[in-house]
Amino acid sequence: MTLDWFDADDAEKFGQSLAQLFIENIPPRTEGGRNIALANQLETVDKMYLQIEQFKADHKLNIYKKSKLGSAFKFELITAGYESAFVEQVTKGLLLKL
Image 1: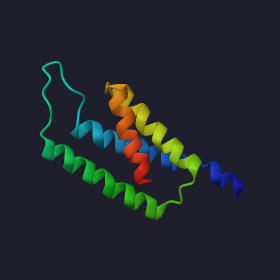
Image 2: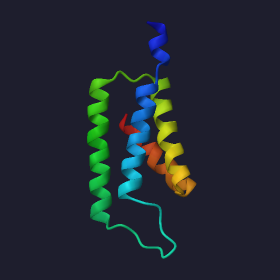
Image 3: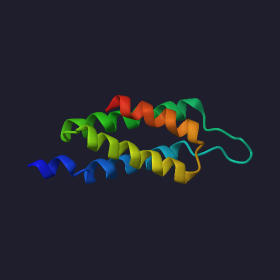
């Protein structure tokens, strides 16, 4: 039972899937500086929040699992080329929803 506390595989995979949803719908700024329309960005964030609520209902998240989920999300965004200050803000918002 104690080992389940450290089993964060589902949380990490969920963090990665949230990051992929974010990356696909709100890509890092291109060289031309084009941005996705604000309405599209808000729709993506709403989708993420719905997925978070569903994941929370299906999985018991302790502090370790929340940390692993947030780290996986953050790593994916940094790897995709987002600015670190932006990634920090988005990840903080994600963790507050958890």
